[in-house]
Length: 320
Image 1 (tube, rainbow, N blue to C red):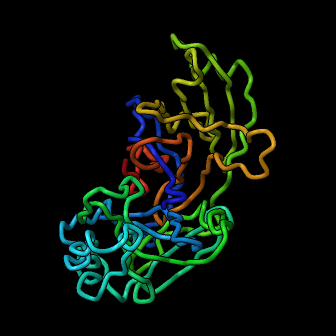
Image 2: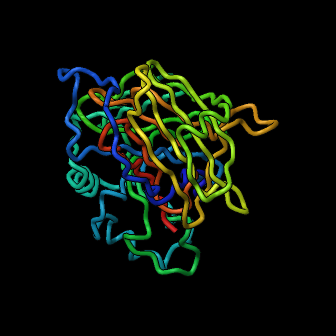
């Protein structure tokens, strides 16, 4: 069974209001990496009997209809359902997967924990290529290649503490480390005064909720929750630079079962699982901000504080 695959929604709808000026600092040209066909991934936790596996599914970008060995699938009427839930891919199917996601055995997996600032580098050649049966397939269903989540097993152990170890980790496969280390910050929002609401968030027909602020380097972030009967329906964000000019703004909305994450730590929680994060995460790119929404469908997106309001989806294989 799948224990944790961080669920995320369709990309939040955003407004297209023009930005006055882009004064967000970015890295130098020499530090930039190639972001063409750039993919990052969520780390999931899978259960096999008394074992807990950490796993990266690449099925969001690898859709080969022959990804699973045909001989293995033919056995589904002869073996127990449990034996169909997991398979290690042999050399030909491993190579097919590597070719399909455009990496080689000479590349590496980069695992970056932006909370603890720990970067782990693992050669792709050391990773086990595997496939797990989707948790939405039950005994009695016909099993085909699309029934499987295909990717790499990172770690396996007994016990549930493995979940917290990878909770704030994102993964990348390639020849170079794309991450900027030690630059991410957990946002600790402070309540802003009514003058902020009037200045930056006027004119909404929705009920006004809390207004919050946060300072990051030369930028100040302002957040305004706008409410309907059952809670926040919109969340507006404005970023102001040290010249008091608006450099970024965005409206987050929710749909299809998604929920806004709280801006303050929930009572009696030791860890703020829903915290928002900001900072420089990728070399040569503007600062990012993310984790405002817990989606039901799709995957989380990272928002860059640039003029284009660039969005980068975290591949998570959030199937239903």
